[in-house]
Length: 578
Image (cartoon, rainbow, N blue to C red; front, side, top):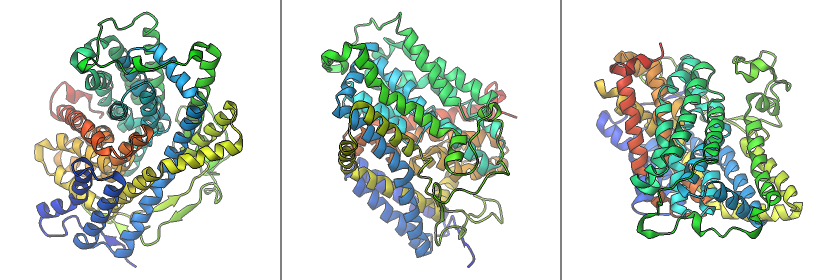
């Protein structure tokens, strides 16, 4: 059977086709933000509209559309839902033992001012988890910690989303940039370096921005040393590592530098501006009742152990060589060259993926049965692959589960007690899992039906303003799919083709797709669900979306302006990687 070719103007009118292609997004966001429908119902409604558009307007085969929805739902549950479930399980274990309260107290003692807590936890600490794991992990961790520090659920969720932006392009050990290089055919190091000449500007801005979003202009000025320290010590390593090493360790190195610098600053500097929140409310941190034992150094160390275990194991699980070992692809050996990222090609001695630890299942009616067509893909492009890999051992969520179980035993839980907590956690996040599955199903239907490419082509046809709108295309991709990696896979080839047609350096626009995309992480439904689940504020996703939408669009527009300057205006144009 010949592959089904995507048609990006099925109605014979580009404007009309674009309006129809936008219906699933409009319905989804409108249902969440304005109609205030519960998000799992809104996601299912958006999925229904996406299927209707794919079947009726874009004439996608019925069996392929349904199989695509199932493929997306499966990916939503694994690996993404698997991460959230096990992370909330670990969090619940620490809450049940009272250790999260101790951890909260120790953080409040280290940085009593809530504005500094935002910088330290939401930006610097969150960036470490983004670099190690990605896929919602940083938002889940930092939102839960912020709420326990006394922030309101809306603030904890929204501010964590705003802070988790600049590190995203290098998340999960550089996965988005690696995927971008794969689909665009451009040099990996060139793309890493180009993104590293765009995002450091925003790494410097974001700490100020997130504090401004919380405390206002005057409140932000009162902690400018902390914001500047966190931003500079993240931005400089981000530039250096991305340009002179590659995408793998950018966030890890930058986050550790930023964390260490802010902690060192707090040794001799404290805010002294007498700032208070608006309406004379108490500081969130001031409402915390520290446990009497929180000052006990041994107890504080005990409270940190589960999270240190999580950090170590998540990082270990993210190392490519460890993943290969768990997937049965090669024997476990780490040379210095490999750790430097010098070994980029597939080892011819690798074994096929182990059937038990990473079974690969081609999706019926989808795998190699759908083909992208020009101008989104080159003529005679290979049919799209659709293979679901159940890499249950190497998945980040499994590393989190191992950390949770080890931490549970360390905290004195029996196996039976942990099973009870796990069952309770599963029940608590059931609607979140449904939402994530429905959202990813929607994203996959739009991808394989071609509706996403129709929207992308509309933005690409903007003439000399293409560098600006091309950056917004990356934002749109992440807002639709919830992943910078998915957005790069979706639009990487289109960005290169359009850039070559308009005479703009392809490496600039492909990197801009990733850099613009990071600002879409605030508004994608997947991230919002993760934030609402972590703060136990499920059902208020519309409020979170409204809280972050301006910030997301404003920062994306700033990325577009920077890319426009890099395309046409000296000295910015000198920054483009040749």
